Image (cartoon, rainbow, N blue to C red):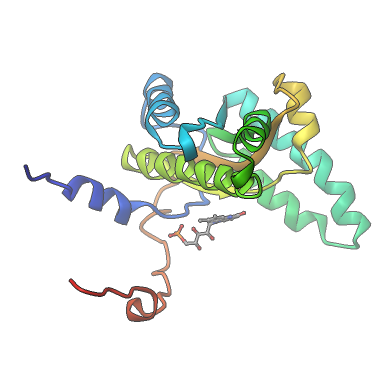
Amino acid sequence: MTHDTTGLKDAIKHRRTIYQLTKKSPISDEKIKELLTLAIQDVPSSFNSQTTRIVALFKDEHDKFWDLVAGKLKPIVEGQGGDWSKSEARLKMFKDAYATILFYEDKAVVKGLQEKMAVYADKFPQWSEHTSAMHQYMLWTALETEGLGCNLQHYNPIVDKEAAETWKVPAEWELIAQLVIGQPAEGAREGLAKKEMKPVEERLHIHGA
Ligand SMILES: Cc1cc2nc3c(=O)[nH]c(=O)nc-3n(C[C@H](O)[C@H](O)[C@H](O)COP(=O)(O)O)c2cc1C
């Protein structure tokens, strides 16, 4: 049986980092929830451990998250003698988007696996990160296929405690990454610079084909 993979290839090519996002979405919240459910149900995990947890924040809840990040980051930047206005503008750019998807890993499950399969104990935390990355990439690619723009951020761990208190996140869940999503501002995707690419031959080695 052959499979037509053109759709998937197009989706992979279409995915980019888009920073200029708006407070709109080209698709319904229901449709976004469907994709989040698809990720949770069908993205693979090491030993089928299903360690990934997703907390999706829409609209006001999304705004709240970026206010929490600003509250935590300001004293850090100023304490280091940095230019807060630059960081503030960057955070405003994220807040100006529609929603934020928080990716967590359940460390209680990882710990359980380490105890159950001691021979891989040192590897499970790493595989848990890989599992998270698979969910991140799937959603980033799928959401951009639906007309959304996305960018991936890492304001953990500074915001972990406040986020956990605000959205009742269990203490065992560790925040790994934040995917900011929204309808791209006019021309944002079209205006992207072409990516500098390291030679494929240096990065891809095939034998025996
Ligand atoms: C694992 C990973 C971590 C990243 N972390 C950040 C980040 O913290 N902040 C950010 O603005 N972009 C982040 N990015 C986006 C990359 O800079 C971007 O994907 C890369 O420059 C290629 O551009 P493209 O996404 O348009 O293809 C991350 C990407 C990956 C894959």
